[in-house]
Image (cartoon, rainbow, N blue to C red; front, side, top):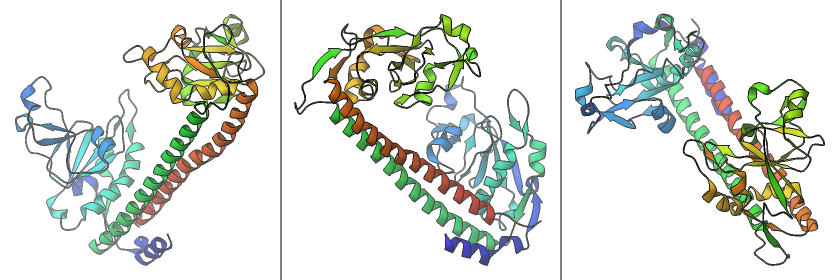
Length: 414
């Protein structure tokens, strides 16, 4: 980092003489398009890269091939030239990529090709980096309509800097190095995050397997009369939320907001609504019975608050005589997931009904053993979550740090 600062001081872009031109003076701008999907000839055995937002999501911001290709018969006029910039100027605005091959793009992108008279004056990697600045301009220059788009007349007037090539080359060298270092660090932190999660999941599953036979365990179904019962939630929707009142849990919050257990709700409903709603009490497990993916179906949170709370439809709550946290941890195990999978139904929306959930078996050790297991997992959960929360924060800080120095390097006097 000290080297970066030193290079910034040596380079001092704020003091370099820079020529400024309007974007449309420097670039030829053309919109992308989609060849007719009705004409299959355009989409079979094509070899011309046709870029969409999916390509940026999948392969990053420097692209030499596309996920999808079109046939030359579907092309109107000339291809977009290699070493051009594509920028999203509709829908998801303010993302761009450098394309290093001749190509086509869809209509979401505006294509920026450097004009011939400026080709000897610009390093395309410098252009690529400066477009991160223009991305932010784009986000601030959106037409307010039902379909957001950049105000193109304004975009064409934006100023684009042309510092000496030696300055451009040095900026590119610094940013390439910093980009590589940031990517390596992010990859290392992400790998560490994944490893910690796997370690925690393995330890939890081992602890709840009882394979060693050291503890006497009864295996019973969740719906066994001596264990517990499932109660469906009420017709609670987001429109029923109030600023204050009786606490409530909406099924979507279970996999987007809550963890293993909670004693305060994020949302509330009116006293009047709560009177008609079915309510979970302290110790009950609140379970999401629907999701868009198999993993989140039956995700659960133990309610440890003192008051009763309303539970939404597409959720149920499990009233039982077990340790609440013990049950919540069991619902996270692979053992539970394996039993759950055969009961999942639906296509776009995946669900498991309470009747089928009641058939899933749970190992039931004595309450003292349940408490011991919970104490161990609570400590491990706290340690793991502090790391899990800390690593994404570190990744975000590194990204902010990179963007700060990048923007400093690309700041010039007018």
